[in-house]
Image (cartoon, rainbow, N blue to C red; front, side, top):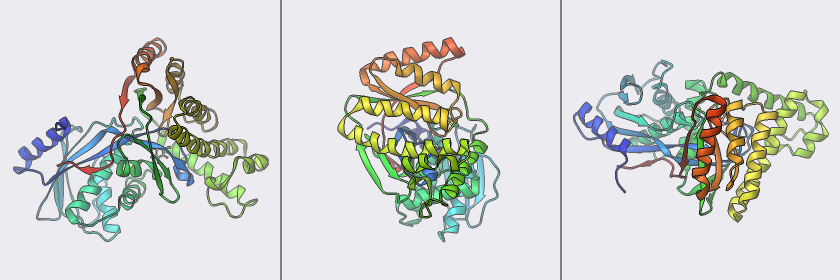
Length: 388
Ligand code: GLA
């Protein structure tokens, strides 16, 4: 396979900047989620794919206890921070590698000094996990250089901890797990309680189309935390009826309906999204396995309506794209992907229908919003790996 453009870019820049070849180049992908949204912090199921857009990191060891990292996409911004104590957070892109240093130290590892050059083509703020890709790339590189021998799932947990406690974003485990453990040609069903995973190959002739609304998430951090709190509230109320439950994962749709009136109306709707979404994940995985694309597509559309009406994390731009895509012959279904409030939709469709979908999305989006979405087919790719 020919060298990826970004691999060449980070390798060449490393050579010029640090006057030696990098010891290794690591690639960690972004993701789209086929279904299972806002279920991961409820101990539920998710079905993401790692995509062919990734963070690329050229890295080499140095003798002291410092890291110097240049980010090519941040106007070549370069940061130097210590690796033998907690680096102070600056609120910018380097909080991701710094958070990984903090988390490694917390776990008793001693990350070595490094030079690094980073570049990524995962769009930032588009709900495709650009930050998880960066964290996973650095954690994997430090693990390889230091011979820590971490399991990929432990590495993902370490990155989630960095994001939760150092960066201060209270995300679930989905993004880091798929960036670490994705498999080319497959969607990964993850049980976020046990971290057990099962891989489902994408049926032949089916494309995963991504359409980026180009609306960047705003206020999503605080809204995300509000949703999490509402889910926790639902659990604490339902616990009085069902003492054994510890998360919405444990609640069936029947139980929820039976005690609907115990819950404030809004909390009930949030819980209903999570409880029904968990079922949809299991069903879509089975549909992929059995090639039942029509049914899978219907569930994607149902999932979108649930996110729009019950969980209230969609925006009109995403609704418009979902509606437009789903009207095209050969498109099975579509939904927003990621946390919501902006970012992307995905559609699953026959490969032959992709040009029509693209044309339709361009036309409708232009007519309603006077702008173009960025539309492309994404190929399910591998999780983190050393590529050189
Ligand atoms: C963000 C978080 C994930 C997950 C999704 C919603 O991407 O990082 O952990 O909660 O939102 O499904």
